[in-house]
View 1 (cartoon, one colour):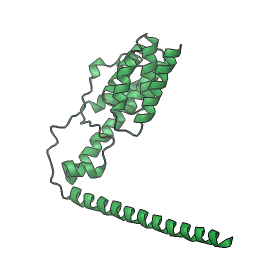
View 2 (cartoon, helix red, strand yellow):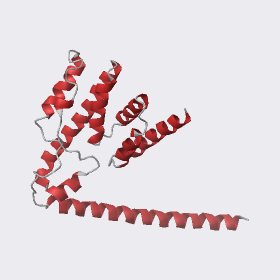
View 3 (cartoon, helix red, strand yellow):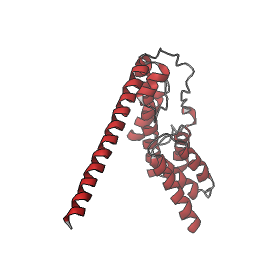
View 4 (tube, helix red, strand yellow):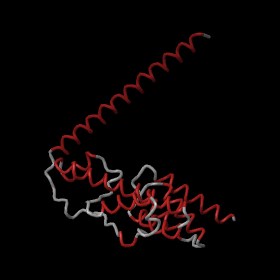
Length: 207
């Protein structure tokens, strides 16, 4: 009775060792590929960045006169105004290695700054819209949220807030456009945003 148990244990040990060997080889290959990609990226020649899809801020279309005496709103307006003269790029989902490979290692610092400007832009827009919603200015908040979505923000709350505004305005069909935008995101938040919007659509159909 003991022999089958011993044989099974030996077989288990052999299979475990084989599996560990396979995983180790895969990890070695991944590491080798990573270092080779880094080497190639660091040797890529600098490229011109003038033709990249920089983001334009239409400040003239934003509700800068609404609650502008509120300290927090004024801070948002100040930050957004300051970004108008900066270069802004949405590089979400693109690694530093990919950036170096595409544009050259000497452009990495500049590209990182442009991406940081984007992060500052979308987080400030989200904050601004939230302040307006809290003070019952839905139309003004909607303008900010629609712009944020148009530049592919990956802040989940912005999508759900905008979808709820569409439902309140009796325009639930616009949620389909939000879903399309969300589905094109390169962000890890994409699936969660899509599920939230789909849930709102289902709730709307059931009411």
